[in-house]
Amino acid sequence: MSTIWQGCLADTDYFELRSRGGYDYGVWVTTPPGYDPTTTQAPVVYVLDGNWAVGLTAPLIVTQKDPLQQIQPYIQVSVGYAGEDAQHWDRLRNRDLVPPGEPIAKELIDAVEAGFQTGARTREESDAYLAELRDTRADAFLSFLTAELHPRIERDYGTAASGHGLFGYSYGGLFGLYAWLTGSTLFESIGAGSPGVVNKDSQVFALLDEMGDSVPAAKLHVTINDRELLGDLAVYQNLAKNAATVLHRLTARGAAVTSAVLRETHVTGLQASFLSYLRTCRAR
Image (cartoon, rainbow, N blue to C red):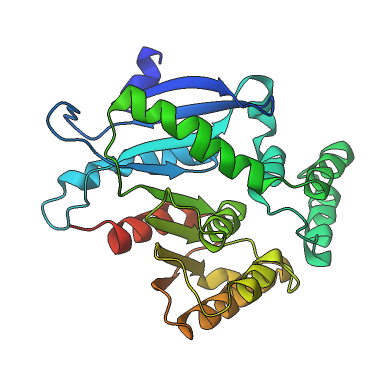
């Protein structure tokens, strides 16, 4: 990492890794202050949407030294896109973070069209964004994280054998729910911020039905933002209402699920959601 970036993201390495599926990923690895794997091995917290999230979340690794509320040691591994793909991260994440077969909500299509009408996206960008939602592969990306990336992190950074976590926001939060509901055994805690359960026919509800009365052992922490629920954008209203429905169904089964409502918008909520996950699932 260059000197200037090292100054902004202390104790952070960067490398790129091509998946078996042929996709290039950028990986930022932030170690705890003074980390020495020969004396103490820390677990990993994987953070999705690295191109956006690393700058907002990696600096919070200093919470491990907070004298008022210490967080258990962890190595943060932020996963995003590399090379030419980095500039298209906001649409490529649709492919990787959304469960296979997830329906595209009309409210989302309307929001993308509104973005085009206001000049936020070009027509080409809008069409490409929606195209990525027609062939979604969260199952392949989950396999990449657990079977390809994690073994390298274990080897290169001397991680603990257990205690690993996963945090995702928006479609990353949807991916967190997917990883939890499909019973991924790598993660002992998952933070799902404003999970993108936009459609009432989401695969999340199908997975809930398939799960029956059994629930995964991993901790799950879900956050939503009050401005999503109380604002006037239908796509965010649906997201918040459907996330609440998921929570109600899980708590009724006695699942190890916690939740919080944050005073944020969908855009500003990422950092607050990550901090809520740390305080709830990874406090000493």
